[in-house]
Amino acid sequence: MSAQHRTTYTSAAAQRLRLLAHLRQEAIDTIAARRDLNIMMPAARVKELREGGHNIQTIRVDRYDDQGRKHPRVAVYSLIGGGHERR
Image (cartoon, rainbow, N blue to C red):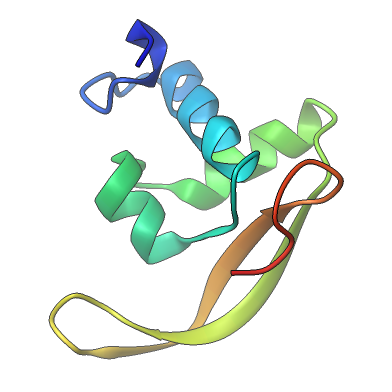
């Protein structure tokens, strides 16, 4: 893994790189982005990626967190034309 993709790097730029790399492989929801990519504000990073020209779709779904608690309307992000479109 390259230095910019290490989850210990918390700059917005490093988070955008991690998120974009993941979205090129598959969709991700807010809970997983926080847990797996160490991105505490995924919506902000998605907004920045969109402003940079990336076509990212958002759908809302119910999800359960690692403690089994239900969260309604969790965002699921997909890179259109560059990865899996739904998870």
